[in-house]
Length: 374
Ligand code: SF4
Image (cartoon, rainbow, N blue to C red; front, top):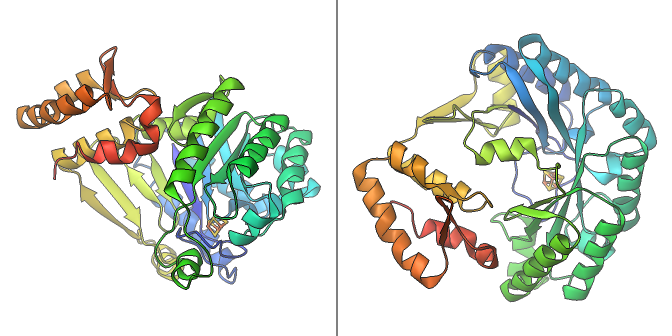
């Protein structure tokens, strides 16, 4: 699978620490550089038939449909697509006008991941999103009217501008809109963001963990009552609508990341990442030089990654994989660490898979990191 990172956004959301620029001055150079990277790295994936292509960002919907199509065509010069390939475009509600959607529906893009975040004005204002509450709703309807059935929306819970009642209303609206996939994250205060600065100056109160905990479990119960499967800590899908792209990440499959700051993984022991700087990326790729660094993952790194990713999913960690892949010393460490957690009920073994019971998923990262080899 291939991930393409579009490093541009209209404006900076207050909580975001992803890599992007709000200036489009070098957009054409960037697109040329990305095409050069696709060509230069065409032999890195063993599997030349893709089951997923994902445009993330940044804001991929900031591009014109012609620019998006040209990137798809570039990928198709070196790879083929499986018959039922999933091609996702992350899109912001304010970009999804009728004209854009009509053109997009005529391309191979067959899944939209919409950055809705909330249907409430106060939340969107605090987050400094480029869209308003009415666009949050209307963009989803327009996408559906344009023929996009495979839709995901992002929702953020635990904002200081929200509470459980507002959150319930957000979820009711989501159900009414009949969206088949939802990714939902707690509002997190990242370093060097506007949100962090407002909180440190006392202009905004910090998100409360207790409230986030309540909203998380309400989310999970409510969506399951409405036919969703909670298949990863932050992801919910109606049957048949799991994200193929993310599911492949969580099953440690190889992927190629194109664009500044994009990561790649060879499915085994090498991970690489591109420079998170648009100018440096363009300069290198213009000279046909890759802008990436890579690391060889030690057994310990691979072990920690397997624990962190696997325990966040409903599939858990495959115990036969642990047995076949890791040294005796690591297996011993694993058995010792999981023993007390199983006794405490924080971990269970089912069908030869180690899992965190769903009622403890809010603490999944903490439980997983306690098992790490350091
Ligand atoms: S649109 Fe997405 S990537 Fe861009 S600033 Fe907002 S959250 Fe970050």
